[in-house]
Amino acid sequence: PRPELLGPVEVRELAERLGVSPTKKLGQNFVIDPNTVRKIVRAAGVDAGDRVVEIGPGLGSLTLGLTESGADVTAIEIDGRLAAELPHTVAEMQPGARDRLRVIRCDALDVTAEQLADAEGRLPEILVANLPYNVSVPILMHLLELIPALRRGLVMVQSEVGHRIAAAPGGKEYGSPSAKAAWYGDWRIAGNVSRRIFWPVPGVDSVLVGYERRETPLGDETERAAAFELVNAAFAQRRKMLRQALQPVLGPSERTVAILEAAGVDPTARAEQLGIEAYLAVARAAAAAA
Ligand code: SAM
Image 1 (cartoon, helix red, strand yellow):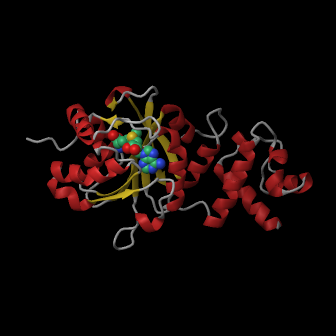
Image 2 (tube, rainbow, N blue to C red):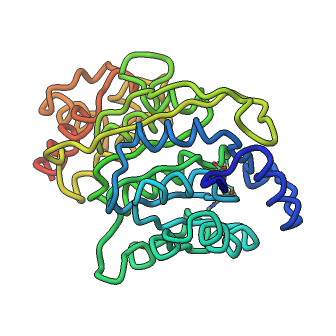
Image 3 (cartoon, rainbow, N blue to C red):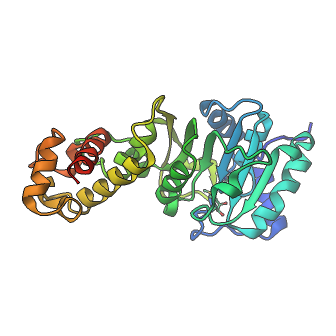
């Protein structure tokens, strides 16, 4: 039978036919292992009829796993040749799935909710992607902010980055991406990925990192923006105490200390000691003091 997913032979043939030589600049490392693809689709909990958004489909290795499961896939690809070929690849390998794929050719950092909405105006519910390494965090943050209704996400990123995203307060790995990601839900490392399942083989290890959206949002959009502004200011001077680091946002020393105390936060604490709930508490105390 003809294969429904791309293995090493199919990936090479497709790349050769398209004249694609993978570029480092666009983080192009293509998955050549159908077992890994099926593992990712299963771990992401993707079922028939789910609306999935995939960033950087490339030659279609992961896309075909998603369409195979019966999902409706919106794929965002910056590389014009890859974006143009993807519908043909899916039509050829899974003829019944062609209608369940939509490809948007653009930079994922610029994609809008209007572009992502389907004909009925519905946004994707699940994010699944093997992200380009150099821009994985900004792309992730853009999508989380753009689609508040995302139920869950599972992305493959560079190992260090994944551990930073999933980090809890208090450790060296905890930073502004960890604090911001935690706004949306609970993150976990969902598995390691061998570098041998890529072509070309990357110089770094990868992990799968995933989250489930919180049942009740922590706060509204205004509160999120205010909390993120505090996170940015705190981590911009992560060695300093919050009573100093937050002055650019909260005002002169006395006022900053009063707001921190009103929020129940120790003014001598540092950025990495606070979870996102504490940043939100400070944002609320600041709004109340205004
Ligand atoms: N999903 C494919 C796979 O698993 O084999 C390819 C993954 S590869 C790591 C990253 C993909 O993201 C490439 O296809 C690359 O062209 C694309 N890409 C890079 N930067 C992008 C951006 N800013 N917006 C959208 N796609 C991008």
